[in-house]
Length: 228
Image (cartoon, rainbow, N blue to C red; front, side, top):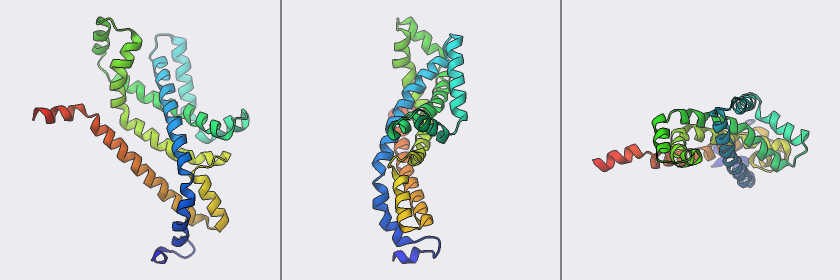
């Protein structure tokens, strides 16, 4: 049956199917890289956002320069600088690189979300005697996460796909496993098509999770359903 999907000289279906288990051995590493780097990027991105919104001009300027630089430099270049330039081990180098680059994009999402919140909420919170850290933690950040969720989901998908770059510094994630299989069988086109499909299926799962979370956090819809 698999031979029916084979295209001579282009795609070997039996090889593609048999290579899936080997390629998926790198999935846990891809997921680990994505989860750790994304969490770190969220934290760093939040601090960058607070720095951007700060009244201290020096702090604001440093944050803006950092974000501009990281948004303008390819991920692979940053990865090579951290790995070859600073001599970091492969896995930490990948996590650091994905974190520092993605945090710039996360910060822009948070900044736009913070600015989309009614300033009156800050004033109301301060009138209740809440400190600035508590206002951010309990009032502003939960709303900003809800507003920025779709954009943050896109960053997460991009980060998961970018984990394939870690193969360039010998991290044994999915793309690294695919390269090993392709080299052993001398059929790169088949394996690259296979890994493309696997990345797509993983992104479908992540998108489904994002959509579920958006529905869970859609308080306006829940309120309307309750009133009806």
